[in-house]
Image (cartoon, rainbow, N blue to C red; front, side):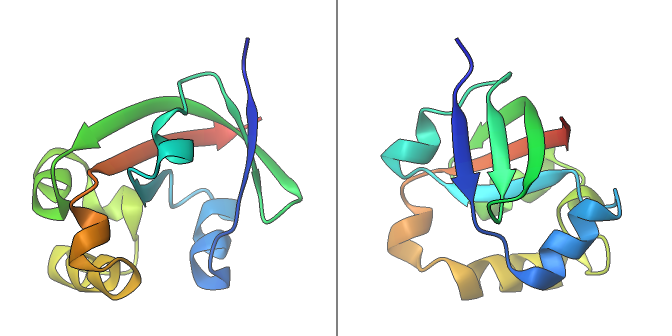
Length: 107
């Protein structure tokens, strides 16, 4: 049975999602995130309903960016800028938990 999870997204990134340009949300492997599955519903910032289409699982941000379209993650940043932005959000010990690329679509 699909679950629902609220995720809080920084305003700039949320705008890209709502514009349809950002279709992959990146998170690290916290246990509550690692349990998510395709078909689960996400409520972004408590008000925007999206469905998880697919989840890619990677060892680190470099592997993520080698296997996912960086423009689907951060449409206005270069791959290097995206890597830097991810590392500004998540410290190395958080990245070591594993990285999830959560592909979403409007519910």
